[in-house]
Each structure stands twice: as C-alpha cells, then as structure tokens.
Image (cartoon, rainbow, N blue to C red; front, side, top):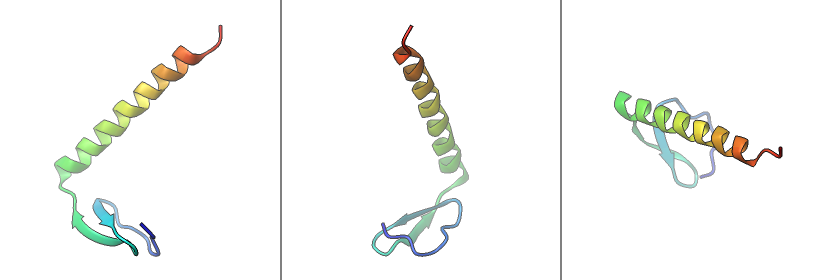
Length: 53
C-alpha cells in the first residue's frame, strides 16, 4: 500500500493509495499483540541457537 497520511491505531488499511477498510475489535488487537510477542520470543530463541560458542 502507498500510505500518504497518518494511519490511526486499531484499523486495517489496504490499497493504493491506502484506505481504512475497517476498525479492529479489542479482541483482534489483543490477538495481534499476542502474536507479535510470541514471534519476538521465537526470534530470541533462534538468535541464541545461532550464536557461535
């Protein structure tokens, strides 16, 4: 998407130019945060496993 303006928190944007498609529910926002945290923790595990002794 080509974003030409500030995007408000808690919305889905798509298209060229980017347009707000819909607002995310509180549950969807919390789910996205949980997935991001899990992904971050997995990246730390991977980073540690790749460290040279």
